[in-house]
Image: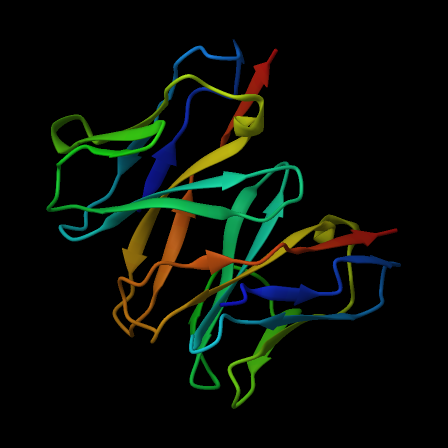
Length: 114
Length: 117
């Protein structure tokens, strides 16, 4: 089975722009979660999508949003980029969205905001 | 609130040495899961092991072993006969099972392991 894929792998944007990141989960997985990793804050939960609905959300401003499509692929959008948004954004998928499912991660998208 | 503490920021060992990575957690949940992930320089978090709160049996997988002790809220990870390919950042994580379904992971700050020849 192919693993979680994320595109693009690297992005460079300037302050004020917006960006969209994409994640394709493991085939058959229906839950997709997003995490932000920075040197200062570590790994932090952004949100989780299941059955095309945002089911859970972390403590991030509304500039961070996402969606999930009927094939379980997910996109994450960040609007009005700030320097502090520079990070590795990791997507994880887990089976049927059960509360105890293991999350499997993709390679991440490294976003640099100039 | 949940918390995972990995007090060791960086560990350096010589190849073939054994090394233990420490993880201490805090949670008020009675049901929870603990994980270890490996993050090589490429960035991907690689799943290593999952343990539930009701199973304190230690586990061994090849050169890897894990010691879960509920009494001390610890879930330590030992690599026996370390190899250069083990060099990576290792994260301990704890689930929080959400009332609406799904779960989110709370991660420790990671331990950078460097294995040198």
